Amino acid sequence: MKIAFKRLDHIMLCIPEGTEEQARDFYTNVLGLEELKDLGYPLPNGAIWFQMGDIQLHVRAEKNHDGSSQRHPAFEVNDLEAARAVLQEHGIELKNESKIPDRNRFSFRDPFGNRIELIEML
Image (cartoon, rainbow, N blue to C red; front, side, top):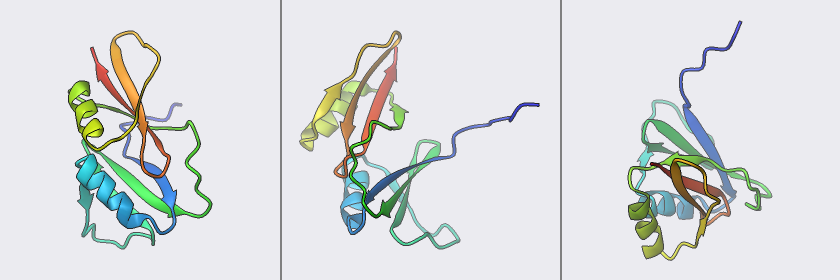
């Protein structure tokens, strides 16, 4: 018997405690995500949820977060160069990733050190 996976529901990124407002600003004003409010249930302290396409991004404060890990989500976008331009307008350092057939990609770090990859399928 196999597990019948349907789809990815959400991804959680961690931020240092006390940076929730900075995270809210970055994810709404830089990345353009919609913050989810009035979910019908309370969120844990330090948690902010955003809608990102058909999945949710959960951002949550944690103790001792250093953001140095290579773990990361990779999000497919419609126009990688437009995404690159938006991030560069905000002064975000971008890293070109190694080539993978049939896709272009780059990564960046959010203000809390989380690595995020953006991909455009060719």
